[in-house]
Length: 617
Ligand code: F6R
Image 1 (tube, protein in one colour):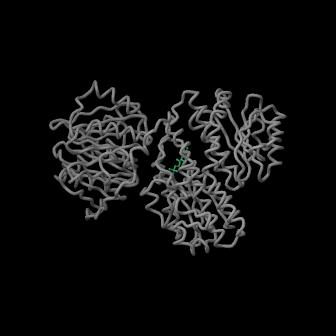
Image 2 (cartoon, helix red, strand yellow):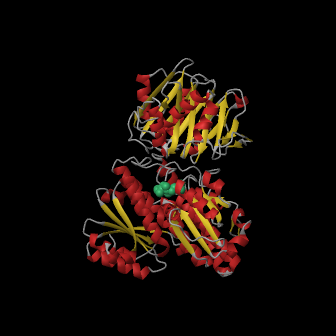
Image 3 (tube, protein in one colour):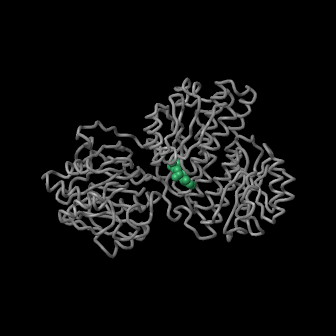
């Protein structure tokens, strides 16, 4: 994780870097730092805490002048979050400065070697080792910075996105990538360049960006085209300049108190964007080009294996129920982190679907590489266009949810389910596993989902009132069955990650096998009890809870009478087909967690210890 930014050009670098870091804080926010070159000297300031702490410190520490600089916002890996371990790190001579996102795995042996050559270290980080290795190579080989970075990186094992500055060569910044993302914003006539972990820090300055691929590095020099080279053999790479589709409005809060709330409210639009051009309900057509182009593979697949982490894994579980029900293809859902290390059986007849909002999750990326090496066809479901996972797949489809900045995933989840449900419907049609009448019905239902999500959002104040009653809870249980069992898991994850209340999701019938022991008159239990599927069974589960005095918050279908009589609170959602119901039942759970977290004064958009993209394993 971590976010890196840099600027080189004619403007004042400080505000560009600070604003950029603020936009990258979703990647990590336990410490931050900046280095500026004022034409003579390197000035730097770094501190534990957020970018706002850094701003205060800079005012006391340094002159914030200069038109070249690099900055960093950290999610600690090696070394606790403190001022010394914050980036940038300087080399022993003080001439070189680096910011780094990733992990250098063999840093310890390199450090010992450097210590034997007289180097001393101020921090506990792997990054300080890397910058000193670069300096050592530069001195020993008598080469320029670019070459020294290339040689040094060929000696390290691990993952990195780095930006390196050399005070003796102040018209350039050297960047390199392996495993962690890095983008270079190209200014008009190559008069200025912006460097960042993603394009959000520079979208108001340029729409032209180069994304480095793994094992590539670039010398970014004022007045010159960006020279991209392969780290392994120093060969030239013909780097493409991409035109960015992002705009500033998409990455601002737009009047909402938090990004998370904005993103919850964006779901009707995000879901519509997911099926735009793909779902033609009236004509009875679903067209997803990544799927159409590989239809034969999907029709011949003996099995689909879904790999993902966290919320994306929950979307995968929902997809398992939908694919098996609609298209009758066996599906297995795996945590990417387990799959990659457990010697799984994968054959050429398997299709692996990798789900990732960020497209940068290290475990998911590694799982894809493993699946590909065993001959499976890999299909990616990503949100971030051009991300590492999106590029690594054999084929894929974007969810088009727009930037998700709140660390807790919301619209990514519902758009992933939307896209996967469309895929399952399309396959069901092609395989003849669904009648034409059901297929038509689902298409119409799908088209109505955004409107129904909007209806659920309209009862936000009612959900807020319920949140108020339970904000002091210490434990919480979420129950659902069938298609809504993964929603129970997702509801519990949302609550624990942003409010720090312990929560667990369970299939409702499993409650009797253990969790029922937890229930007492202080325990809130959120039950998804819509009128489809195994309604009577879930009503019995609710009764079992009530006999143990648990407090029930039930998500029910509009007009429900039975559950209303037993539950302490009911939240009504519109009538919907069971397979698509997770798209609606999820919404109240997101709002409930959000309000509880706000009332508990938690940092909703940046929960403690978390980061948006988990680019380390
Ligand atoms: C939870 C959350 C995480 C992510 C997980 C995977 O709200 O956001 O659990 O879902 O880190 O991230 P992606 O989807 O980017 O691979």
